[in-house]
Every structure is written in C-alpha cells, then in structure tokens.
Image (cartoon, rainbow, N blue to C red):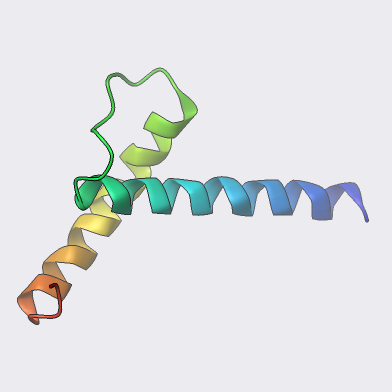
Length: 65
C-alpha cells in the first residue's frame, strides 16, 4: 500500500470522526468543546454548520423523532 493511500485513509477517518462528533453534540450526547486548541475542536468548527443545516432540514420535514 502506497504512502498516498495511507494518508488518504487517515484523512478519511479524521473527517468521519469529525462528522460523527458534531452529530453526537447536536443530539446532546457529547458536551460542546471547551476551547479551540485541539484537533477535534477544529473539526467541530468545520462540521458544526453542516450538521446544523442538516438537522434543521430533517426537523422541518418532521423526520426527527
């Protein structure tokens, strides 16, 4: 496996972790971030608007339980 493919897999896992973390915070399972010093907090800043829009659409359609 090439180095580029390994880096791609790591980046994909990092992005997936950020999306899951943002969704769990919107569902009030995880607490909000304390500061902007860690890599997960930077992922939260990136994916928070995306998940906010997603949940607004889902709730507007009445699909959220």
